Length: 316
Image: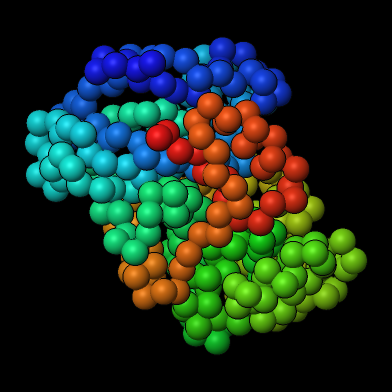
């Protein structure tokens, strides 16, 4: 049981399967200058969590606490914080990748990484949004600059990033083509996808053409194939930050653009995302909700690849 100096957190001291995750008591953090201490109400589980759990990823060797996006209540503010006060409801994303630690009862982080929680969302719904919506927004709006009437291809459109990206693209007036297994096509149509494609059955470069922008959430050969779907001057934005240099070489040969990105924490972008939420144009689909103590099960379910939407942990 945590007290006013400790907190519960999902901790691991070795890499491996979900069973390496354990809820332990850790020291409660203290906010430094320009930081807030947030009492976490809910935090989401993303594919990057189970990838880091298995192989360390950017973080290397444990021990560590995973989790990047959350929704909660400001408990305390550090010196210099004027934007928030104790009791304010906020949501946001800890800086990726080295700001991890959201799968805990408290986090201390720069106030600049948070925005007021959308009033129309509860904490579970709000926690599901930051990482995926910031990724999709930055890919489609900041890098691809999609405009009304443009054709946008979104890979894994029923996934965490994908299903949010579909809604952002539709809100900007795009014609959206989404890839997913056939069993998820009804879900894609509910989201507003104009054309659903089963990636198991087709060569994407033959099935799709004259695309203005592609959101690549898969990488590898998919990145290269996506280049061949573009019209001249089109762009593929890959959220896989590393990969073959062929991606850029082929883009240059084809007269198209290629970008690899990592998501940034941004209050400004969170405010833009909140505007879409309050307009009724954006919601995260919640696949399942688990208490903190069942984080391992959330990882197991998420890794099946059969869920549509987001997995969320709650601390209550």
